[in-house]
Image (cartoon, rainbow, N blue to C red):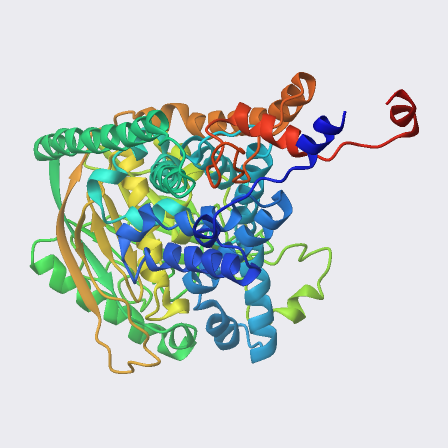
Length: 583
């Protein structure tokens, strides 16, 4: 009995060298989490250090190791907060400039938003530790599953995903036609998981986890090979598709100037002049940005205005035009944010109403129920939501319009895909954000829509970044982003580029949607709910804490079962009166 008690109370020892390799103090763990968060946003536009995306989560994994799920959640949340503060640094200025909020309120709202949007890193970290406390699975498996599930479920005000860092790395993003951006995010987490699993095994002097590491690296290699194959296939399809020379106008008109009625005619003439130049250069289709037409248009109108009317749209234009305008209906209480296509003869060939409005920018939640909300956001507008998707006819083909940040939403473009469009056109006004990273982040996220649908995408943006993106996600041409307030003399820009009317073919992603994401979600739930139940019934508890067996001081358990046995052996026995009598 005494020998048994002595064994139970003996504590494993670790060498000083082994201890020093692990982050022991709270500030060390917090620093690692903050570094991970910084690496995520530094990998994205406009920093564009994209290789960081493949290793960004490694410091976070070391920070949360051998800790409780609660501590892992807090550290992950910190990493997410840092990522969102760095990635969306332009929001406070936006709120102060156009929301008329003071500095304190603007920064408070921004930090609340960053904290909310950073929660999903916390949830991922919590899920990892909760699972690994029960069963020692490699992060090569766990990290991508939990990240994909979180990105699928977590609603954001400003949609984004970890895959954004690879937007310019064309071979990597090709799997988006299978999985959407979630597959690219998973690749990045597989990479970080492999690095962590191998590095932690080395530090703990455990056998290297060769099997999961090889599987992880094999998946990454397979994705890259697939990417190269698909690039060649899509390039061949583009070469055979009908070519159209598209002219895009970027007027570079500031938000404040844009809203002044006395400048309406001046702005209209500016768009016309740039269009005449593009037309002379051979443009076969013209595109103006979101709400570029300066007067509201009645929804009942079917033709252009008369020649003598200053509001005439197609003045001296001999090719079709796609443009944005505010529309109103006689029986509608609020206006719509709309896109039109008009023929050279002045016939309205199609109209599309924006479906997804920007909260607090284009609509105020519970506006009719709580009208006082309007006083809190005096600069916010309130539009009606569009409910339908449509295409515009062009040379017997179909052009699918998107307005503003609808090109960030995979679920929206999948609806468009059912109409079998041959070209995507996005009209946007990012003048709210000026010459910050936002216009580039917007373009980076839009790149995935071109790959998912295998269609060329033309983006006409009021102050930039205007761009043409090929069906394999390659940026064919682009302008810069400008802030007319800071650059009062900035001139309008034009983009003239050949695009292809791709066949309205199906892709795996347009047909099955986020099956990959939901599969990861189901697997994550099984791990979170099923593993604790299974281990409880079997009496198994895996240990992640680096413990050393008596025979090898400083060495870590070589397997989950060994770790469980050691943990059970070193647990102090419960003393009770019955056991004392029995002894």
